[in-house]
Structure formats: C-alpha cells, structure tokens
Length: 189
Length: 271
Image (cartoon, rainbow over all chains, first blue to last red):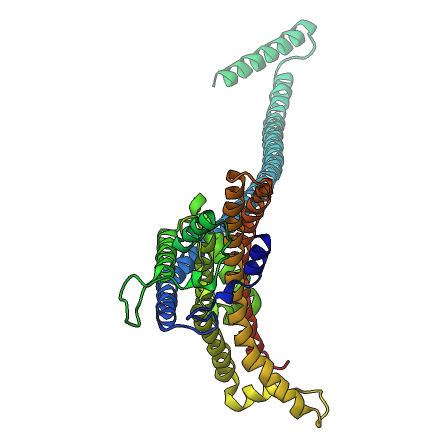
C-alpha cells in the first residue's frame, strides 16, 4: 500500500493523459491573450494616468509648500531689513536734528548777546554825546555870560564909588542878586 | 476539485492511494464546449482573477488623494513596486516610464493568476497552463527585440547582441551562435517553463499533501496507527500553502524583472 503511494506520487503523470503539460491548447492561448490585453488596457488607460496625476499633485503640493515658505522667508527678511534701515535712518536724523538745534541755539545766543552789546554801546555813546553837547553848550553860554558879567561888573564898579566898603559890598550883593534873578529867570525860560 | 474528492472517495473505498495527475489542469469544459473559446474551471478561475485584478486596479487608483488613506497606501505600494522597483530602477527614468505599463501588466497579471493557487475554493493557478506563460514570454520577447531594433536599427541591434567586442576574431562566430541560442531561444523558453512548472509543481505538492492526509486519516478510522503519519502530511500541506503564496509573488516578480532586464540589455550600448 505504501509502496503504491510512493510510486504514484513519484510519477503523477504516468497514468497517460490526452492533454500535455507542454503543448498549449487554443482556449488557453485565446483567453490568456484576452486577459493580457484587458489588463494592459486598464493599466494604460486608468492606472497610469491616475497614478501620474496623483504623484504630480503630491509633488506640486510639496514643492509648492517649500516655495511658499521660501517666498515668505525672503519677504520677511526684506521687511526686517527695511525696518532696520528706517530705524537707523531715524536715529541719524535725530542726531542731526539735535546737533542742528544746538548750533542754532548757540548762534541765536551769540546774536542776542551781540545785539545787546551793540545796544548798550549805542546808549552809552548817545549819553556821552548828549553830555558833551551840553557841556559845550554850557561852556559857550558861560563864556559869553562871564564876558558880559565882567563888563557889567566893571562898569558898575567904575560908575559907583568904590571907596566905601559898605557900598562895595552892597554893590557885590546887588550884582549877585541880579545874577541870581537872572539865572532864575533864565531857568524859568 | 471533483477529481480530488473522487480520489479520496476511491481511496476510502478500496484502500488504494491515487496520486494527483496532470489532469488536474484539464477539467471538463463547461461553457462554449467545442469552440476555441471553451471555458473549463481553470479558464473561469483565470477570468475571475482578471476581473478581480481589474476591479482592484480601477477602484484602487480611481480617487487618489494627496494624503493617502490606508487602502491607498497599500495600492501605491503595489503600483510603485512594479513601476519604480521593477521598471524604472532597471531601465532608468526615461525608458522605465516607457515600458512601465507593459512590465506592470506582466507583474500584476502573473501575480493575480498565480495567487489563485492558494485561495481556498479555487486552489489552482491558471498560469500552470503553459499557454498563458507562452503568451507572456512572447510579449516579453517581442518587447526586448522591438526595443533594441527601435533604438539601434536591425543591423546594429543584432551586431550588438551577437558580435561581441573584445573577443578574438576566430572565436566570434562560435560566441555568436551561443548568443543566438541564449538570447533568442533560451530566454523565452526558460521564462515560459519557469513560470508554468513552478505553478504545476506547487499545485501537485499541495494536492499530494492533502490527498495523503485524507488517505492516512482513513487508515486511523480503519484502526491502523500508521495513519498518524497523516498529521505530518497535513502540517507539510499547510507549510507548502505558505510557501506557494511566496512562490506566487516571487514568480510574478521574476517574470517582470527578467522582462525589464532583457529590455535593458537590448537598449544598452554595448554588452
């Protein structure tokens, strides 16, 4: 029994068949070709376009994401640089303005000082000129008055007797009183 | 299937063991009997495999999303394995994309037809019939000859393939004869026989294991302790099912990658 088992197992094809394992049969070839063509058509018309589309879409998504990130990065960098430039500019501007203000202030101060000095000088000069003029004036009037006074006094002395001390002193007193009255009258005028 | 059942039934009745025969692959026709489109059980299994394959390929790639779900990841893995792993990695980006549909068809078709050998209820691979293997081999053959002639023209293609550089002139004719044999005769024949015989042998092994298991368990029923051997044969059968799943995928891969390599050799500038 076991011998029969091993024998028949060793030669499975020994029973003799009208079919051969090495010679293809027509239905096999026909249905095999149809099967191949069907699958080929499905792969060419359906699978490949779908797969290519999906892969392209995925690559676009990934590369698009990277592109967008890079663009945003570049933009942010530019914006940052812009702000930094503006900040630096503002800082130099402030320094410039402060410097300007300081020079302007000192200039104004100097000008004012100069003006004040000029004014003071002008006032002093005016006063001196006035004093000088008045002094000249006084000198001129004194000179003419002293002359006439001397003449008046001399004529008085000559006209009156100068022997009496009392007369002489009355004479001088009268003269001085006249002179005083004259002065007063002049001052009133 | 029926013959397996009959065989076990016979074994039970007479106590004689009947092994599996090649007739496993030639059951009685069911449809279109007598025409060239005759359909028997194996042809129906082949068409079922093709229908399921087409359905899977169609539904699996119909709405591919940017962020794939679980099903799409599996589908993309399978498609990418054939498209990138076999076609593009062997042939390079440009030629790989050109021949990818052909190589993918060979891979998926062979895989689908092989895998039915281990699916319960079907349990036979329609690639065990030599016709399918011959068709695929002819297609691979035509593909690599076409690729070479398209690129180099008839004369330069055959000169590249046969008249090898760096060989002494007086040996060149001998080498050329050997190259004709190896390139244009041995290649398609080995492609065909490797696939068919792997599937036939796998099927025979499985049938033998399970027939023997039934036979030995009958012996236990009849009171013989020799029947305990049946536990061993059953374990062997389970192990061979696992092996056959692996062989189904391996043979599909081998057929596809050899096709790609033959095309690549035909496109190469020099050997």
